[in-house]
Length: 107
Length: 415
Image (cartoon, rainbow over all chains, first blue to last red; front, side, top):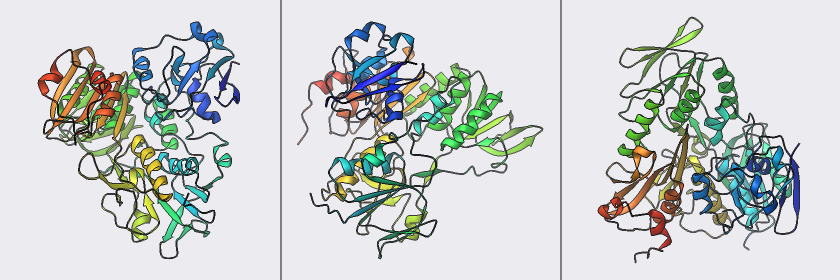
């Protein structure tokens, strides 16, 4: 099964094993990963599941939809090229062992 | 910090608002004891997906918790599966269903709302559903997989979210709404008419000016009789006809209520040490200049944060911008501010293309914005509404105008 590693700015990290088809946001919220809020329940409506995806996984990610793109402009922590919404990334075999950094602020 | 370790804050209700109060107390350095009373098993969870993703054919099948499994222990928050049955504000105590009494320094009502019952004969027949809890959603998910014909009573947010989810599963869906337009209390006529047309184009039989008169058993199924005398066969009926704040406990404790527990701008009731937040609280709304009670995640979480500050001795006037969202099939609606029937509506963008916003002007000032499939407009609107910004309708209607640019420009706040 794929794993997701959520790295915190403090240096702490949590590796979570998930079923394929689970979103990064759902994995984080269900397992209580600090710093991922997911306030809208995964509708790309609140931009509180912002993550920075490590560059080595970038070309395996799904395209950024227009909605996600617009919401990423509104994140609390600065948007970078690595920014994605965790609710819009669904785990699949090609993303096995993805590593993301959790921003310092979501709200 | 003014808090003392001898303090005890008791929060009645483990929804978005109640959990946020506890979270914000700890985030703010509160060192007193914190207890949350959860009267709805099994654990605090997110309701919004229940009427959307959860009901899809490819449903995740699980509900999202409001916080992870270790949160409560890590933050030293006691989460009790218990219902409060009485509050004694003179003795500052709460009695639980099992007879236990908890003493409190601060008490927060976060009791939420309950579905308004359907006031017609047949409302409690098997096959007639409401949707609020995880249990409701589980029942509906099961019933949907065996249903072919659905009747939805009430074209509000819940009714239309459910209708769109059922339609996406290929079911025949009829929606009965007694009012002239869908989501009429919350949306401008322009937006409401657009949604009506889109839902009809997607194959939903939306019937306006037509309420429910009775529901009859009909063989193995049901028959819904409308106020026009028409009858609609159904395997499953879902009603969403509004909610009522859960104020019984507060009323029995002698707190003032009027469509919600009455609180001041710091979310305090008139009784020392007692606050109310979220769906159950009627508060002075800086955006409307009147007392309102709102049902939304934003209102619940912002109230939660604000009440925590009040408890910690930093009482200020609550003035957060209200915002709302609804997902109805492929249609994404986001609202910033609160619509009033006398607002002037100006369309921004292209409704025919399915991506647009409606600016609502009140006395020439930007008071609210409804956005359809336009998150950037919505986020900009959250920064702009409620700041007294005067805008000219002709400027807004110019295709070159953008709310995002206006928000980025840093509009001066009028004196």
